[in-house]
Length: 269
Image (cartoon, rainbow, N blue to C red; front, side):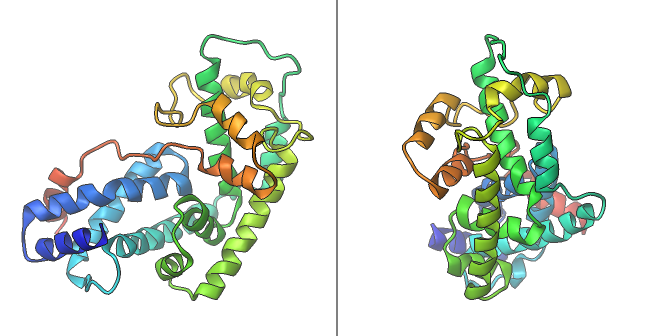
């Protein structure tokens, strides 16, 4: 795959429009998945993905093939997301304390059941585990997503972030400790001691609009709620948290930017 993408990049650099289109198609889902895990909001992730791909194509002449093309694109995406989110974080940063209070607000002791509860419970489960990462500072969140969600090895992840491998391992370890500690205290899927349970929280989440009537995250590809609960029960400790964080479908970009990207770039030049 790395060789194929690098060959496509070389052809696109030489002016092959079809290669450019295929190159964009090959990486747009990866960029969108990263943006979704960093931003959570589908509209924000969609806008960020388009901006990142435009940046990548306008800078394509600088790609030298010293790394995999996907690593090069991830580096552009990481820089974009870091700068964009640092600006947004100046307005308000979600904290673990804020999130914990929100999780326990409006819990129902004996929640009623509705026909769509299975889908909505899955929507709540995924949105909650994704939103939890917003409590990490932006550098730690990106390290966690690259390492534990996208499963990049430490060498590639540190290259994406432009830091040495030792610094990356430390950043990932700090992020992982915070996510594990919070999940273990507050998530009923990970701990029998935690107050919050998805069925108990679902009525309040619906009433507050935290989840809508149409699922944004619980696609047909996502593991269903009951299956995730069974999976988590079979593992121990930190693995429970990792199971919960990775039990999503791969997010796929809703558009085909391949056939439009060259025109978009031409328009902005």
